[in-house]
Image (cartoon, rainbow, N blue to C red; front, side, top):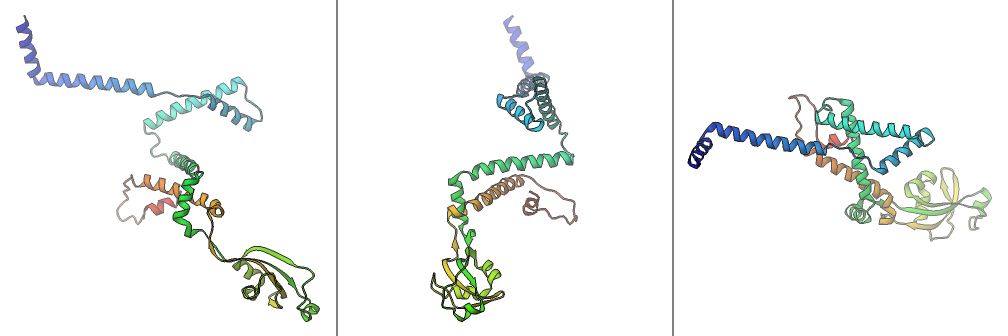
Length: 270
C-alpha cells in the first residue's frame, strides 16, 4: 500500500500538468492572502479631535454649535467622501481630470508649505541657512539726521542753532537722496556728528542738517534678518521638495512641439 502511494506521488510530482496545478494553487493562496490584508487596511478612522474640529468649523460657518443630527450628518459625509475618494484613486478615475489634478496639485503644495513652515520654526535649521546665504542679507548705508529749512534771515546767521527741526531715523542713502538731494549726503559724509552744517542747497530750498547716527553698509545680523530668512527658507524648502519629486518623472513631449519644459519652468507654476 505504501509503495503504491509513493509510486503515484512520484508520478504526480514528475508530471508537468501537476506543476501547473501546484503553481496555480500557490497563486490563489497568495491572491487571497493579499486581498484579505488589503480589505483590512480599507478603514476610515475618525478621531475625537476631528469631531471637535468639525464642531468648530460648523460654529464658524453657521454661528452656533451644530445639533447632534447635523454633526452626525457631517461626519457621515466625511466618511463617505473618504471612502469614495480612495476608491476613485484606486480605480485611477483622477487621471485626465484637469480640475481634480489642479486641486491635488494645490493640496500637495499646501502640504509641502506646512512642512516647510514647521522646519522654518527650527532656529538651528534657520541659522544654518543664514550662514550659507548671509551675503544675500545686506543693508545699505543708513543715516539718522535732523534738518531745518532756513529762512532768509537764518541764512544770514547760519552759525546759530535752528529753533525747530525735523528728524529722520535709519533712512537709506537712496531714500535720503530722493527726499533731500545728493548735496545733503555729501554734507553728512563730511561734517562731525551732532553739529549743524552750513547752508545746503536742496531742490526744496536751503537747509541745515545734523548727523545723529550713521550705519555703514554691511550684513544683517541673524536676529535682524530673521523675518526675511523665514520667508526665504520656506520657499527654498518648498522648491527643493518639489524639485526632488520632479526628478522622479520622465517627461515626454511631441516631437517638434516647440514646448520647453525644465525644472525651472515647472517651478514657475508653484
